[in-house]
Length: 220
Image (cartoon, rainbow, N blue to C red):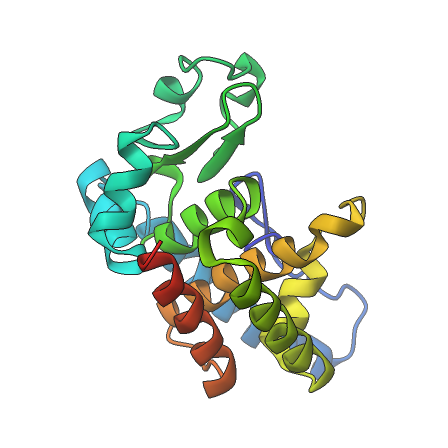
């Protein structure tokens, strides 16, 4: 969700308009202040993050029963930091220092959430992205509901919903065709969670679709 402005956990600031007009420099000054404030808030969102706090966030999103089921069968593990993550089976040492908030390990089929790298308010969206995309959202909500959800997303996209458009733009270009829809829905969930955390507006139709997905997963 932060890919447009954050690379490797570092904020990408709008460059100063050298040689620009007075109006352009004035506009840049306003943008720079907003970006600096956003960067400071982003950094604070990680401070003193704990496994228990992340766990409660996820429970609030998917329900205690669902999280218990996922952790009991080993599908999901919440860890404190990168050092703990790279010790896990199937995790390459090259992941160290990449500041991943969530990850799926193909060798073991497990999903991990890393507390130190997970901004407050985003853990629910992160886990649903990783579990929904890699553990098959369709299996969790059922084929009929999945088709209905997919149609609702397509309608949002055709109507020009900004968050749906953002979610669609975040899907990697090399994603196999049969996985594009699950990626779109996964990014939709993460995008909505990020917007809500920052107090930004989310259309009622988009909010209702994400709530519907959450409710279906809670019944899984």
